[in-house]
Image 1 (cartoon, helix red, strand yellow):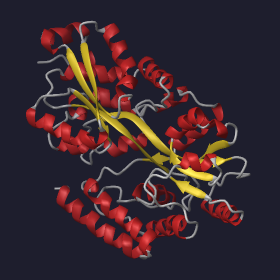
Image 2 (image 1 turned 90 degrees about the vertical axis):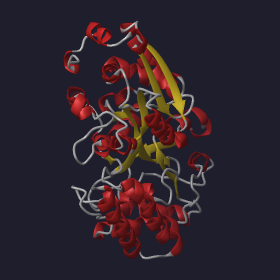
Image 3 (image 1 turned 60 degrees about the vertical axis):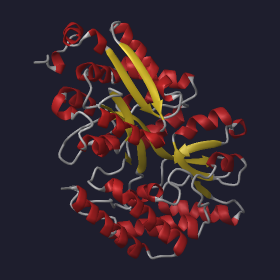
Image 4 (image 1 turned 180 degrees about the horizontal axis):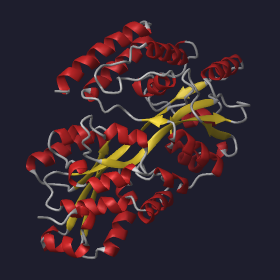
Length: 409
């Protein structure tokens, strides 16, 4: 019998694994910078565990899911993976990831104390299984030109009034980047209106509630009334820089890229929370990635021990600093308390922390991965084709409920 994780020592671990197994292969989703972000964690672990070697490889996002399933089929490849938030439940239910809640409950319990709640909710299965843990996160923010907007809008009503004034003055107003004219862009307004995609127990879709209709009516105005660009990924930063747009919405990555790549905006821009809706909340959509252990690995305890170290203060701070050094803003989803260590001006850091405290990730309900396109279609039917929000959301709810029944068995 293996030594329990909580009592595992390096001596016991090395005794329990063969010399050839003292290696961890890690595949991380992203470009060539993603292994560099994890490298400080690898270096610190090797310092404390000199007998362990590592192979860390980047996997392009559009290939990752397929590659992970292929690795599962061949039962060879990575011991540890990172992936998008849906990967934990999706791959875990296929038998591809270790249920950490069952095998390493002390690890899961420890991470729950410091992790971002929205991400945790998104990656915890409805039956309580936890196949992966939070790794990093991204969150929506509102960016604005300080010289063009005297006071950033704090409510839906203030946002509408600001857009009216901007359009009347010849400014184009608002540009959304992340989630533009789609379900990710609509999601925060649904939450701000007091609505949800599903009920709390994932028994039925609630997207077509009164709150959902209110939210989509409001969101659609950005495009129908205020003529926001509808292409898939507008250049928000350029729009702010040249003054075409006074307001923009995208993820936290622009906090770094504007500072480093848009010198003409120096001193002219700021960030604020998303506007409060009828619920009184400023909820933003958050995404990110998770980290889990493949079920076929021969070194599960070693993998779990490495992951445990990721959440230590020493390692998390080293990773944040390493990301800063390569010009990347890395937010640790498992240690939200340490986001304060990122290299940002104090004012922006405070707003970022406030937005993280009012943010939510995608649902963990069965069939959501198969239903996202239906919600995307509903939003775009309203924006582009003038379909009524109620009718469009009713259609989406039917598909969501059908997938709940199909995949929730």
